[in-house]
Image (cartoon, rainbow, N blue to C red; front, top):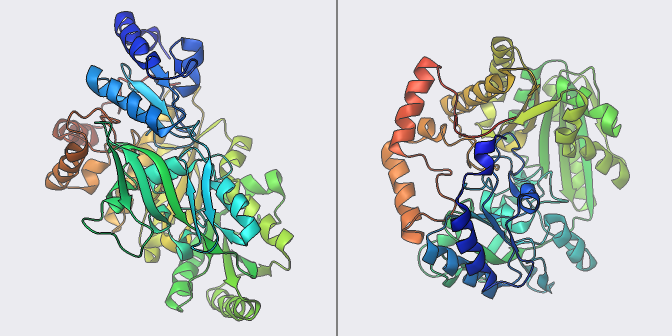
Length: 495
């Protein structure tokens, strides 16, 4: 970070905003000294950083309303923030703006085993919902790898998924109702606890909107019964093409596993010394495929999936025999990101989605890109729904390597679009993929997105300049893309 970033806002303006927020928030809920605001300068995409002018920490819905009204009256940009585990820069501060953290709204308000629902505040951790529901033999299905730390408010903002989203769906499929506060300070409820709600489906529009439409204060989630049994197959393949084809073959056989994940050799060798999950580190690709339900159903489905894997060319197959072994198999996949630190100083995690039938083609294309950019890539996929998470390995201390990693990542995303996919599956757009939006969508489509945002936020104060690119940005990216002569986001500080 440079000195310019430290002094990116006027001290007089900071004092004005601090005084106004202190008038409506409790003591200690308004941070403005650099040493206090430093932890909020980035989210999980740590390569992009910006010191916020002010951080607000409301502890109730009324305080959220009051803070938003202050920011609206003073025309101060607001960046809503959950746990900061996001990987696309969606919670990166605005230089002259306020970071509004929902961390203090962390109570589970109601757990109803009869309707199988839970009402929680946005600062509740994802895993905490399942822990609380466990006494009723229920759980919350979406399980991002960061579920031990990420919050339900952030999950709503990014429409997060996880290894079990193939069978049980993303956040949008497991949230029934949301209470949110608009930039005008109005409390609005979207959705409902019934099977349907009147009017436009604004709940689906809000989930995944990355804090650009309002601030969540309460979420009603769907809970599901814990399965009586769950078992995992670990299948090894001596060729990534065979592994990719096996994924398509499982779905083509009419089987919807509880989870279906793929890791290449680089990933399995990266993870195995970290968690000792028993992975086949000689395999070019391994698949983790889970079945859950009644014991007889699980046994039958495991047998069917094993037959498909063998017919697809699996070189080895192992099946978990107990719950501890099942969790051990999954531990490697869940810890793929932190394990990257064992083999590389830095990594850049991408997030794109493709049709399952193209998994093998994309893996081969990424292998060619590794040669082109001179960087390694560890591939971890939510293979069942075609959601890719390539981890591009680099060293930020080597001049030019992060820039090459960015170019590598952008090319992966563009190839996903070429293959009929999208530039994001669950990490959102944020700052990271805003240029790639110009590749995915037409100008008319982007204008429609901006019109929806304007309907909620006419002054564009909520997380501005994120997710939806302007015409100028797309024009500039087009020139950069053709000439490859400029650094994306040149105005942002980097390592």
